[in-house]
Length: 119
Image 1: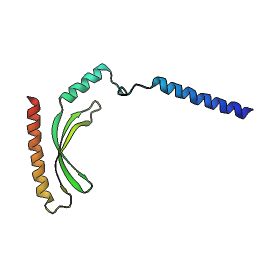
Image 2: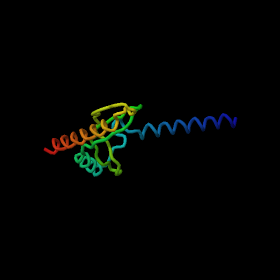
Image 3: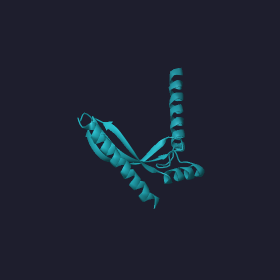
Image 4: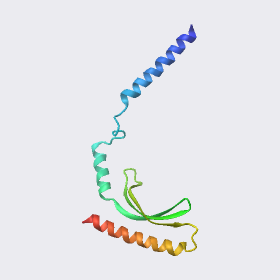
């Protein structure tokens, strides 16, 4: 008898928790919605986004790219857009000159893109 009552209490507790979760769930797209002041700060930060040169290595391939970034509300950089300009094997014997040339092109592209967006 005690076991049946205990099982019933556990089931009721789980049902209550499920009802609470469903009542407090936000509709899709509104999860983490910000107060109006933070939305305004975020919009201002995004408006200040700049293109910056970057590079990384993915699966043994060096990628040189440009990224459109802004400083998020938490102070960390956030990436809005990313465009790969050039890829080449990380073990390429001519890696150093290829990398230097690709990064130079990325810097030039960032200057161009930032100037275009400033107009």
